[in-house]
Image (cartoon, rainbow, N blue to C red):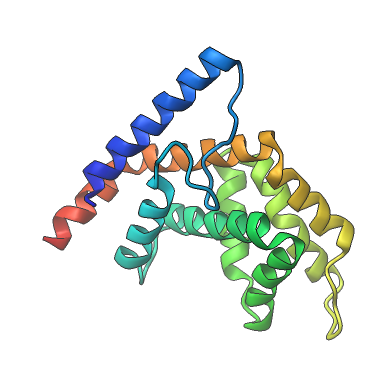
Length: 179
């Protein structure tokens, strides 16, 4: 699938969601990294493209898209243990720089609702650095509980759409470079 086709599919998904809101007053299920909603694989397609194209020197907006995509997926699919695994991946490599950079991007670009949940578990880790550290259940549960809510899914969906729209030209240019 081309980048142009992915953007067409994204626009179709946005229009279907608007129609659903207009007709029913709310959305039954927001597209996410875990579910393919409205027959659309838009998010997985963009994710896969970015993994392949930006395998090195990924711009921060693409890194943020990727990390939030993975973070949301593990929270929805694997629940609290998925979040532990996600954060441990960085902790074990003694490299929280990606989480710090993504957190900074989220905060600086106005995605504060996502930022506060995304950063909370790793902040706790840094405050209590210990060989035997365990993430507080209450923080992980609060993070996961927010992700699965309609509000959380809507906020994350809007983040994906916003990031993709703001960086459309760069993604379209990247496809030209591949040719």
